[in-house]
Length: 522
Image (cartoon, rainbow, N blue to C red; front, top):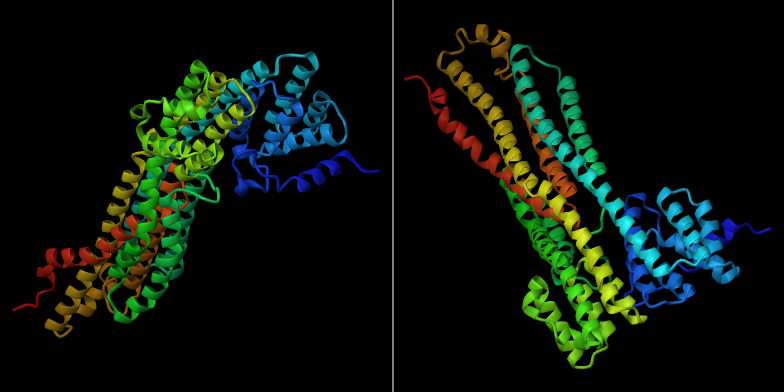
């Protein structure tokens, strides 16, 4: 006998290639349940269904359209639609059956409440609107808690980096007092690496999980250019430059600077595009709300209403909407024009907001109500991201300052020790070694002798620590800010240039400060 569970799984496989109603969200065709994104997707899903419900669309079509969305929550609606469509269950009974078998608390409660509302004959548009507002408040409350936790962990990460610098100083003092074994130095460096990586991982777990850039087939020009530049220019240049720089013997510091400059362009493009996406996400709510209101008041189509808009009030969306209006004027299909607007924006929030609005209008929904629902969703997400931005805006500059300080400290300590070692060697040459052997037998001065490997261990420890911070600090900034993954290359390039500059210029500064120590006796 075939179980209900096996039928549901079979349905999910069969429907995994369904395209969206208007915009094809092909990047999410394979649905995987991600609890980190579940509440955000439920919020969008309920808002989408409430927009469709304003047209009094039949339940079968409403669930069919909603189940085609590429969200993590789509799997539940696909199960409901399958039971109702293929097994002839009533939708209220199908919601109850799927809800009872669902383990996750939020979708379980929503499906059971939906079952009760459908069975009692409650107005579906009002029910879905109310549930969308409740889920928006629930998601917003969780998002704010995560932002507050993230702010505390950024402070903890700062303290962790400072602690790592203190460990380096204490290690140097310990080596001066008594020679350390290489295994101890390696273990200490490894523990510092693990502690810093653990701090980044904790911040990643504490940060709100959200998708900021869409993954449609076509995306913004900056994102496309960054991808091409990374794979066709930056990566090949890095592969070619590493052996060339090694053969030219240009020095480790200059090599890091050159590699940082090579990987910087893709990161800069995405960093600039991220700022543009932030502006678009803030303005999309006002645009949709105004468009829905005008469409309802004058009783015309959305295409006609766009031409009545005051484009000067659209801020960052002024030029994209103007281009869309020109395309509509030339008779291009409205679906293609809206899809072009979404693709060029590069924003997942614009993608979802426009999808809610346009699909709701396309099935005959009330323009004013649909515009308000889509605008409410977009504005809620924009306000929440503003709170996250308040925490993350200064973190990059803080990390850059801390990294500069650590680079100067690590390179400076080693160069000071190296200068003392060179001074002692010149003193030994000037006195033909008389008395130097007795001095070098003392623990502190044994550190500077040629036969001692302590200076080399200090170099290895400081270099390893510096390279680790160069790779980890950009990851910490990316985790806190969120956004496109290519932003990591921008922050990595900045940290690499800082590291390379410290390795290039600090030795000369130290030699200038301690030049009197290395001058031979007259």
